[in-house]
Each structure stands twice: as structure tokens, then as C-alpha cells.
Length: 533
Image 1: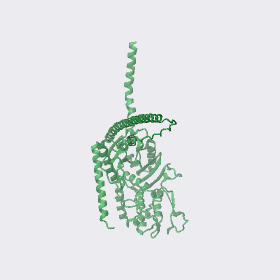
Image 2: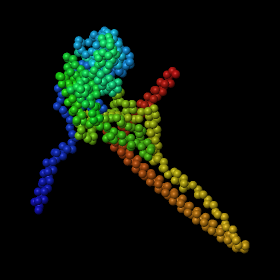
Image 3: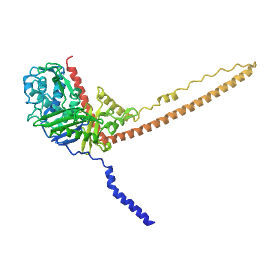
Image 4: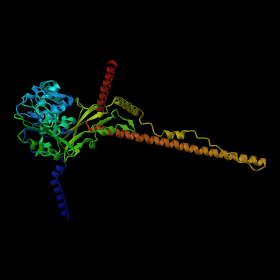
């Protein structure tokens, strides 16, 4: 019997030792998905909502972009020009292009609207349209190139340089895959760009070469095969993009696709006739292995701070207007849990931070940045006044200790003087004997005095009971409120500890923000008084 028990425990121990590595493996966070790679020299796949990089290859290596340059050109024209203005094609615009490069057949002196030229630019990849639009917008191609570089810098591009609006060969014209993804992200956030770039064809006004309005040459067609259902390279969900090719750039391709509540942007540079296959492989990898997650559905570590700042309707902190970006999305591997996310806070904010931000929250998974959001104080004309009122409330609450009890009406009821109860008149006596009547009156007086004493005694008992009830309720409310104050302040400390900040440090941040807001408001009012009416 003893040997059997010993063998049983030995078996249990052996099974535990054997299964321990597998238990640890099961509890570990799933690794970041990987794919074999692409054949193009450079490329990147990013999630539009979060900016998360799902795959990259030589993403910061400069390459010649060819005609995907026109994405930036179109975005600038849409932002700066009236689409119904007329564009005149100059001799330089028409002839300063490489022989055999894409065009729509315009001649010097032709006039088309900015809208017609944009469709020619994005669908037919017409290089004379790129030149004409640049001259129309900035006066010259060189001046427009300066605008392109300025816009690229505003979008966060750091490794690119643009020398012309078309992407034709130029040793000073290059782009990185990462920068091109940033440019494309900004472009598809513009609804006019999406409308133009997502079209499959467009019929523009007649030009000199094709004066007949019904001439089929006046219709331009999209070149991007992944957008066209009758094309062998069609990809379900693809909705925008741009093709490119020159002898130096090789095949370049930008494509945007949407599936499973995710929008992915893919850039392929210096492809070797495999740009469509590389793009399809990247999209399949992204849509099969990742999910888009709205942070506010899972993460309450920061938004819960706001709930800890009020007690029984009284503000307990000057940061009661703290909130988090509701539209923040992050990307996670399909099998990953939100609990595996690592968060960090940065209080050094750049100019792109939303108004009212006090910190940036960055989310990381397995060493990959998967998204970010901002902690914000409600931004409105009265935000400063609200914060100052909240601070005053906090001071009052801490000085008094507890809010006014809600039993004032009850106290008033019991503290009011009791109403005198009117006595009924004595009944008329039917006796004719005066002494008998007097005896009856004396007896009635004694009864009335006795009744009054009992009524007064009963009212005294009720009054005492009421006072006792009020006192007990006040003590109960005070103790309950003090317990709530303690628990909520402890919760606040825990929340702040979760984000790596002490209460004192956070209060310093808030005070600094308040001083900055107050000074900005004073400066604004001072400027308003000085400005002429």
C-alpha cells in the first residue's frame, strides 16, 4: 500500500516536471508574426489607423520612386487649388518629359480644369499634367518641388527628397518606403483624393489633339491592376494606389486595401516584375495575422482616473476633465491578448499633439510599437475656469471633510415647533342642575389637561426619535463618505502608479498646464484689447 502511494506521487511529480516547460509556453505571449519576405529591394506594410509597421524591408533606404511621386503632387494640388480653375499647358510643361513616358496627349496651349488634370495625373499617370499642375500651383516646377519637400517634412518624412512633380529620373529625387507610406496615409485621409484615385476611368474635356468630345482618347483609365476586377492582379478590398516605373526605379507600387475593419497601406520599391505578387503576399500576411483593436474597449487604466476624481458629486481633483482619445486603435496579432501590451507615457509633446493633451501613451507588443493615444484635458473656452472651480471644490471638500448631508429636509421636519391641536368645544349639558353642570365642566377641564399632557409627551417622544434618527444618519453618512474618500483616493494612487507617475508629479504637470493655459488666455485678451476695433 505504501509503495503504491509512493509510486503515485512520483508519477504526479514526473508529469509536473515534464509539463512545466509547456505550461510556461502556453502562458507566454504569442510572438510577433513573421513572413518569409518579398522579392523587391524595399517595402513596407503599415496599418493606417495606428501607424503600426507590420512588415518592413529596407524601409529607410532611399530608392527612386517613379510615378508614385504623383500621390504627393495630387495631395498638394487638392489642398491648394480650386478644382474648377483652368490650367494652361505651357511648352515647357508638355515637352520637359522623357520620350515615351506616360501622357494624355496634351499640346502647348491646351486648357483643362484642375480636376481634369488630376484625373489625368492619377489614372493615366500623365507627366505633362504633373508639370502643368505644378506650374499652375507654384509658378514653376522648381518652386513646386520646394513645396513638395516642405509638405513631406510636415508629414514626418525624414529620408526623401523631391525634385519634380512627376517622378521622372533625377538623381536628387528619391524616397524611402516608410516616407511613402506616411504620404499615402495623408492622401487617403482626403476624400477628394480618394474619389479621384479610386476611379477606374474619367472623361475629360476635349483637347487640340482630340477635338471631338466623343473621341475615346479623351477618356483616361486607371493603370493599377489590383483595383480592376477584370485584371489578373485584382485584389478584393483594394481601393486606391499608384503604379510607377522608370529604368532606374524599376517597378514601384503603392496600394491601399481594407478588410476585417483594418485598412493597410503597402509600398513596394525597386520591384523586379514581382511588385503585384509582393503586394498580394504582404496584404495576405497582414489580414490573416492581425486584428485592429479599439483601446477604449479594453484599457481603463487611464480613463478610470477620471472616475476616481469625484466623490458624491464633489470634485476631488483639478483633473476631473481628464479623458483619453476615443478613436485610438492598435494592432495586435490574432492570438494576442490586450493584457500583453506594454504602455509608456511621454510628457514631452510635439506640435502634432491634440489641443489639451498632457501626455502621450505609447503601446508596444513584443518590442513592436502598435499604436499611441493622448491623455487630454477637455479643451473648451471654459476649460481653465472649470479646472480652477474644480480645484476650489477640492479645497472646500478637504477643509470641511465631507459634503453637506442630504437630510436637511428631514431635520427641518422634526425641528419645527409642533402645531397646537385645536380642542373640540364641550358638549352642551342637558342637566338643569347648576352644580352638576359645574362638576361636569371641572371634570372636562381635567380631561382636557390630561389629553394635552399626553399629546405633548407623545410629540416630545417623536421629536426625540427624529433627532436621534438624524444624528444616526449623519454619523452613518459621514463614515460612509470618509470610507469612499479613502477608497477613491487609494484607487487614484493605484491608477497613477499604473501609468508610472506619483500624485505629486501628476499635480505638477496639471499645475504647469494650468499656468500655460492661463498665460495664453491673458496674452490673447491683451492682444484683443490692443487690436483696433
